[in-house]
Length: 241
Image (cartoon, rainbow, N blue to C red; front, side, top):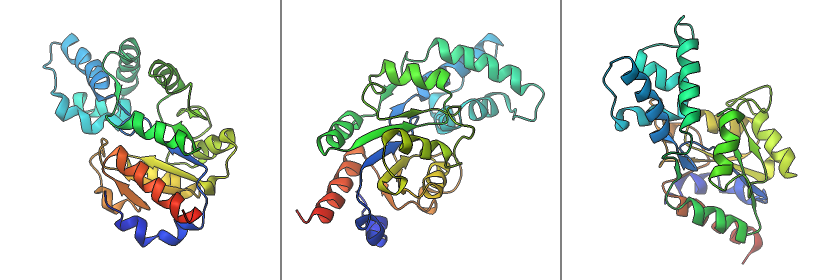
């Protein structure tokens, strides 16, 4: 694990008690890329077009329909074809929501570790509730989370801070006592705007924008166990134990 950024901003972490850890969903807690790619390839094959390899589609998984349709069909929201393709993609994805989607290795131990420390954890995703709620319930996450906030739970989606602030309200925790963890630059932008400490995770999808080191996160974790160790280190420093 790299503690470099954490040490660089240590004073900010140590001055704020940690009460809850909030997570992005896709690419952070769960690997949904196989089902997102599967829905995309169903659309391609239905049009007698060749399927795309998962490795090509995986980096765009965090961008949802916009990323997948952009790569597969070279369309973006202003394109007249986009809305119809997006609707079909949503229907196909909903039908296979949990076929191959699983928590990343180490995530269950991370969540159990946070619970053992007495910390609540929640989920803030841009995935619409139509998908986020059954997916998290089906994986046994929603039942344990202090909050599950989808992209349409509030009037705004990330990188706006409102979804994160709503999660903090539901958790009964002040934003400054939360850490927000994500695998996309907009996660870090949203977390900072909400007044939370932020952790970027390098095991996620990361997109095709700036490198993770340029996102401005307070810390970077390369594995789920690194994140748990990071939280434990901060808590020990705060309590003097």
